[in-house]
Length: 170
Image (cartoon, rainbow, N blue to C red):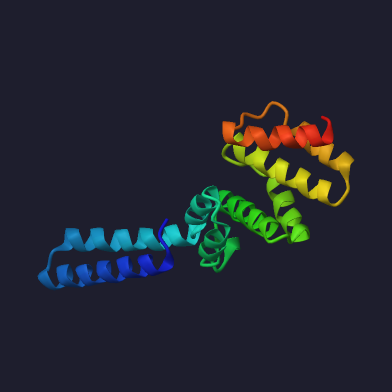
């Protein structure tokens, strides 16, 4: 949940604290500081900066989300759930940059994956339907909109869904 710079500062301060406790002969705080620094490293390897990028994406800060997401150097080492959200964010960032083929590739990977809530799944389906509509594939867009039926979505997403349904006459 921290940027790599903040993590580095925390790790350096924990290392300094551990050295002080080792010099003073205090084993319990030394073990605690070492455990905490190990947890910070594990957290970075398994979760990366995906949570920070997701927070920025939800605030419609696509540039900030991309910048924070680029701190994750090896997305394949992330946990499966974090890989799904990595692709989720990448898809929306590419869509915002009008790279529709890349956005579609990322979002197709996410569509069949297990997202934590139905609102995110509805966002993916709506974005894919929008891309299909832009490409002129109205039938595929209708199919994607029909997949969205029955999903629980937040009220903020209802208006774009209604607009797309009216446009597609679903």
